[in-house]
Image (cartoon, rainbow, N blue to C red; front, top):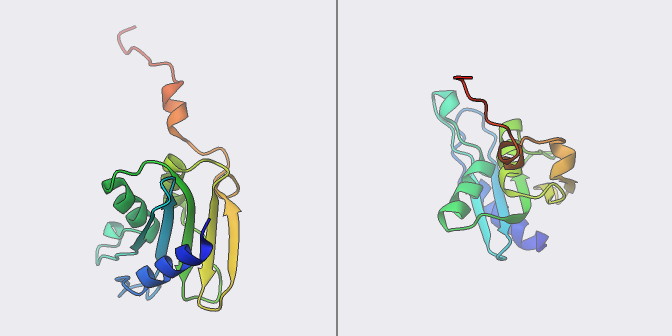
Length: 140
């Protein structure tokens, strides 16, 4: 993993965040298995449910570019406390990352902490559950 490049991309993305309500800018960089790095920022909305987190924006940007597999994710916030992904973002990360993939958080103080996806979301609901499911016939 090129953590320095991920951190630089995530920091730059955080500077583009649209966070007029929370005042909590977030930038994320993801590294695809191809080696390319994609980034995103949080985009808030006056109708709070319309807000999209930086993690989902970064993953969506990579998916638009044709990526489907990722090897690392870094969240950058200019906050004293290191910030891991929220719950819904953890679920989206689990869709595209292996359980042992590193997920890191960094801040403006140069601090960094990392976890595996498995640590952040144990027993994640993934596409393997759907593939292995028995379909129920309602007419039976």
